[in-house]
Image (cartoon, rainbow, N blue to C red):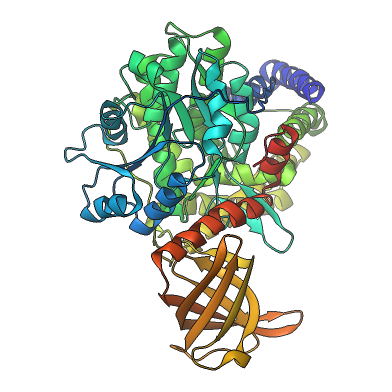
Length: 614
């Protein structure tokens, strides 16, 4: 891989020397200079990516020393109570002795009641100053654990979470251990999952499996909030969690690194969260991250200020630079339309000479970056999602100049698909690119010389390629919606269910497997539909216990299989104990989610190769 990167870099150097010295367009020198600058910005992104991923540090979990006290913090504001309950139930059942705290910035009586029912410690905070960071700092003042775990309200921990992170703190220089941020809803907006082929991908895999291990090798790993374990002594040294930005996690980690503390990245799945289900939630999340990153850059001066090594500075530059390239991507998307409609081009070169320099540069750098990202299609998917978050990234750069900003919580429940207004930039770009394809093709056919033919042809080709990237993900944004208030694990689960119509007798029992299961209901696949409101008796077999429940049929849907027509019958529990509902939650998050997670090939391969797979 490193040999491929070096050859790609050499071809890039060759290309840019030629571009700067032999391709000037005297008829539009301003366009020549601007386009060359944008090309260099693009290569700068690749070069920083190569720098970040050149080293790679993998950790095996050290054996923990006994005697460390642990506080597990779950901050919440307005998340659905059922989602919070799933997290709290699993947090309380984490094996290592600890104290679980619900930190309620919403001051909701139902959350206080939930804490009393489950046995969590509860802290309410009416003023909500400094948002999530203030909530965590308030909990620090009222707790005493040597170590602190931060979990988002939707991040459900595995039972061995503490045991796998604890041993790192035998090194007195370690302030934070950040684990992989994995997700259980493989049908989210940022996932592409083929359930039949058992292959999945999600947009953050590249960061957590390739980029973070490289940053870790330079002690520049980014603290991402959840799931992570922190040393209280280190937090006390910097006055607690940073409160000046909307990304208190990244800001806190950077402050600790500037003080000489280590932030370790451990590439293991020790908890799973709820990825944004719709474009609206995804866009909100990325805008907050980008805005916070720019605020951190403005306040902490990690590139030129004191406290960091050169390698750390470059690693952080790579993280901030990513947001700035949004303007370069927008420029590239506009160039084909501008060129084919005006006849003004950024360079002058013979076609064969151009391809002799450009093809090795582009091809080898695509090969190197695609190989690092897990393959060409993974590279394509990454670029598609880079384009769909273009608006959020463009707006986030104002954080360099903006003071205080409101902390926007990512929506966690029912929400609709994106409307055209929220995607008007992308729809405009699609219209311009489509026009460039049509006009470029027409001008290609009617061109009178070879230079104009290939100039229009190249622009039409790139417009078509950008459409290939942009249209599928924009369509997904316009159509992806979340109708459920509480997530259900889809498709067939390895969870046997016996069922019968209530009161139909012992001989009426039949057996199948659960689908669409959560603490409130499931669906059963049968050869015939059940009438709505039919009352069913269920026996759900999970490793922990056999669960008896009664449910009513709420919907029925036909679908075709190789074996013929089948019917999914959706049911909602109307008689089941809270204890059994909690057992279902533990089964889903501790048994089913890890099996589904194996479909994420890049994550599974990276964690397995490092010997730390969950």
